[in-house]
Length: 582
Image (spheres, rainbow, N blue to C red):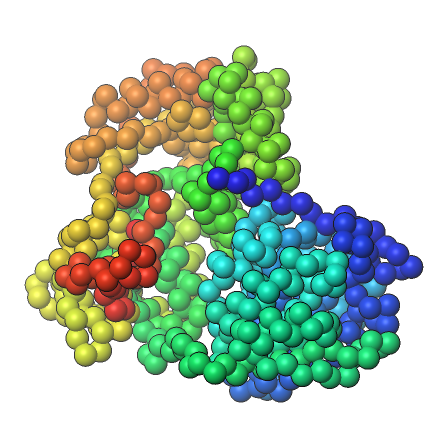
């Protein structure tokens, strides 16, 4: 597997115009970058007229560069009283600028200062992958794909109403304009999609035509005579994925997964009924005093690492929007130190950071001397430091997410979902007494291993794994400023208690037991050698929900009663309206 290493842009100018030396081309016309954005990309796509009266409008840009096209679009959308309720903007950028470089570039357009400042404040860490930014209280959603378009575009699942094709000139950046890229824009095009670009290259026109777009030349900007506009009018009937007519959903399980699903659905305008058998959220696997927020690294940047990196970075940003760790909910953005087991492991850690080219605001490798100074230990080998990591109290995070739902959420606590029945309206959830709890077109199972209690889900490859966490009074441990991880973990104090863990047991015993406590104390001695380990047993038992490959099961659940029609994932029959977040 190829590691996903990102190469950021290098800031340079030629005759006062931002310039990409590696492509030998400028980022915008010397006749004016903002005016070019308005004429070519907004005007070429019939904006702002086309988004008026719409629930949502989606734009896909090939190349993000300085963000000037986005800022011009955001400004026009903001200034239009008849704008769509939501603006989705997705851009693919192989060489993103740093926020510091963007500040210097954006200073050239003071009329955009408030918008460009908000963009930079939310600007993601420069690591490969998808980054979602929510602006204007979530009304504007910017999704940035940092990486090569050949890797990123196939991963996009969208219905684009407009395309901004704005790579460097085709002669300078042929990969961005390849027939393979352009001819497949139809895969993510909405039925009435339009395209605009400054180039009128015959190869570009031909590739777009092969994808079902009808092209026309229009007056160009500045000294450029022509530009290209196109609209999607294929000879075949494009597939249209209809939006749900009724935006009601039931979420089963009020742990972190269920509360996060509820908050995101409510933010998108859904009415949500949250069903939970306990009298309050976060009482099962999410009931620990502290949960650690950190990514995972691998030398080959495998799918698990990429998924966790994206999830971690999105979570950190989402939590800040909720009010912030340590403010809206308990926890600390104190950083996480992932200790090396030995000298060979330390070398692997260092080589991984170097191989992936990861920026220091995402991860730094520290040698043993630096780790010893930070932890008060001696003889450690080194560690990864994740400066954006930390810990949270899951129950307070869940409460913050549910509060953010407002009146779009109905809580059905002390209600255990025991059966799921298909109805004309979707799904009916019944309790143990046979009475109906809720009915909706969509049900999301976010109740961990308990999801397997339904006939529709009994065949899912899930298991419950016992985890015992040891509670240690903070005053008996050295005061370390970060969360420590290694063979085990030690959190910072939560209500005067540090959590140490955790056991990994294949049984269903819910009681604390000495053997698991002793294992945790051995883990404590490994990650914090100076810690006192003759500590009386205290702690908590929970059960992880795990799949065989340790990846989450997310999405439409399979219908086990129907045969699979082919060998591809899309050939698996699904239960309509029934989803898992497990």
